[in-house]
Image (cartoon, rainbow, N blue to C red):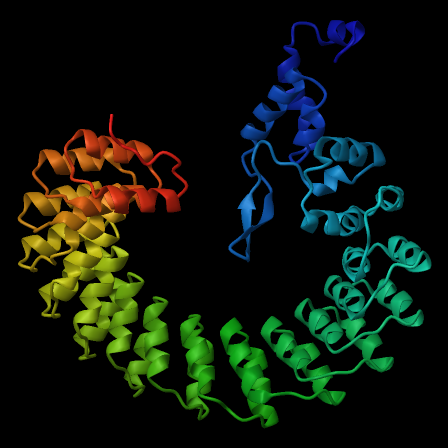
Length: 504
């Protein structure tokens, strides 16, 4: 902590305020494990500082095998800080030793490479962590030439990913070193460089015989780099004009689109669809006026993304449409597109009301119904299932019939207000409604259902047992719900409830 001289110098300032407002801002977020390990005071002050950050940094997280970006929390520890110094790495290891997953153990060297400290890399090897091709690729992607040299000199394996990662970051010197020392490369070196507009990397790779394919032109067109697209064409790179045109239209790169057409590359109907989908009216106009074909997807994608100007242009110039145009407009809540399509005789069907209710787009639902779009009992089912009370109310108040399972699906998805409204306005329910609440372990809803005379049977107790919630099972038994003891025990055992005896 602060020594006496420092305290005297601070005068009447509160120590916590000094750390929170003056010191921790220099450190930044992501160092929780290191700071919290010093003492309790610093731990709490650091948490307070992190909570005060208006724009926390974003970090990568994995959810169901998909990498997503999330905001850092007040207790986040970034591996960049863990592997910044040997002292930090040792502290982290003492705190986590014995709890590291196999996946994390395998990634330690790569994380150390990303931090860029050769000393930490030595420490990692001394501690028995292993490296692989990803270690070199990570260092190369960060542009750490000295780290790449050290890794290669000390026997770390590499493969083509070293060059592709370096190319993505535009680290030409790293690529030169890797290539001069026998590191393999492939066409992805070009693609990664083109995607990030790293022209010098592409030139070097081309001059030194790196294999190539059409993906390089695709990436350049997608990035809107006309200069690079021209250079690639002049230097014999294969170019798929249809794909390049679609990607240029998707990104709104009119200059690239014009050049492709003027150079003689063939149009493809997906060019118009891509321009309409992403709202690039100028690209759509140019493509159509210069002979590019279109189809019903052009209108439906424009409506689905809410690009009314593109939808109008396409329709007014003879582009066909069908029910999908209204469906996608309603699905994504684009009321103006839905209005325009209907007022100009675009067909629709019951799926328009259904998807509006499912997604909770009440204004689209109102407009569609008031203008004659058909609906049926599936509207109440969909609105209740997804918790859209306003849609459920509107549908019922305007004569939409109840679906027999509306109460049950509202219950099983935790939408009590929808359940309550449906029951109070005559929607039928049965034993499956209580079973749905029991399966979810929702005693409060079960109590309300029972108080309002919703029937139950043996399946209700079975659902609670199968859901693994002993307290719900006990409540049901105490309140007189019938129970098939054999079935109930089997379901409870399957869910790991050791004592399936629910008698008091």
